[in-house]
Image 1 (cartoon, rainbow, N blue to C red):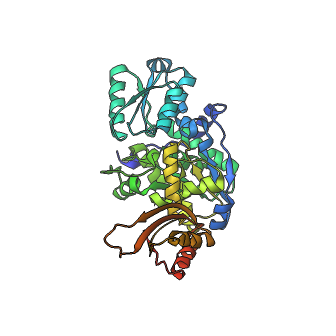
Image 2: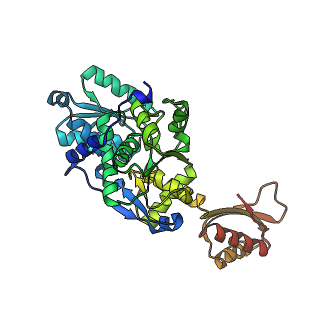
Image 3: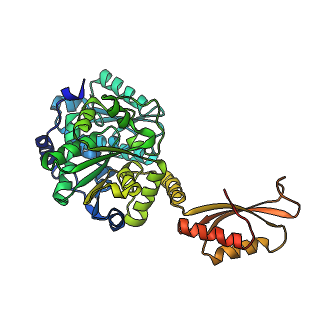
Length: 407
């Protein structure tokens, strides 16, 4: 169906959802980020949906959708397919409303998200390596049992529920000029765009997708939803192969700009949120912050960046922090050759200590054919304070005659 033929959710729909959700969801805080404000040149606020019930905005849309089912529909139960956040939102909403929830998740879903969904009372089924297979399984379950399928973004009630984030932003930051929102399938983006534009059409809405799972740019260029042939990103929460007709219509009509961020941008932003904002955020949830960090001059302040979720596997968190430190120039890996005699390694370490580099890892290699007799190669991984400090460390080793080469 062409985007022009799809009726959009209205501001009144979002207002009605807000009344429905009053007392059910948290009015999440809007936190000022001085570190981002210094880069942008004006106020930057973080809308902290990572502090929402279930750790993301998804409870808003899920509760709105399920609450509007008839008693007979709720008695048949609900079913969803999700990599994690929508699953938790549906599970909690169903429990609050007295409906049985069945959730199909990919086998690759983070274990904490699976455990949390189960803890909210849902019946879990794992299958497939991406969201495509669980979506098929959920549809088959709905057909077989009569359960109502709760789509993660392609429904008017879901969009209206997610849009309540936008109403809160306008109330908390009345002079906002730019709202930056992460996008997967586009439910949150569509809802916020409706809410904000209905009250303040002058506010600029900027959407952000992960580079390796960016379905919207190609779809917008084609004038219709176009599926991606493949996806690859750490931001599993926004890894959606194609927008729906409904969300595509909203984004086409209401969103001012679509941007993408790299994996390095995402990991750098996640590290930034940990260190500077003291917030645990998942890669999908930090996409808006990543876009602002990557190109701060492009966002007119006051800016509100939506942190959409904080449900991250601790194992992934460790990997992403390390990746973020490397992307920020905080890790330095070097190889250098030194004489194979007592005290050589101590001399290298003394030089590193003198310039304040923290040694994380050291390896010796004596048997490589590239080495001359009487030489040993030392591989070091260092923690530095950033690119300038890394350059200082390298220069100090050069002055000491060690001829380091980057790894």
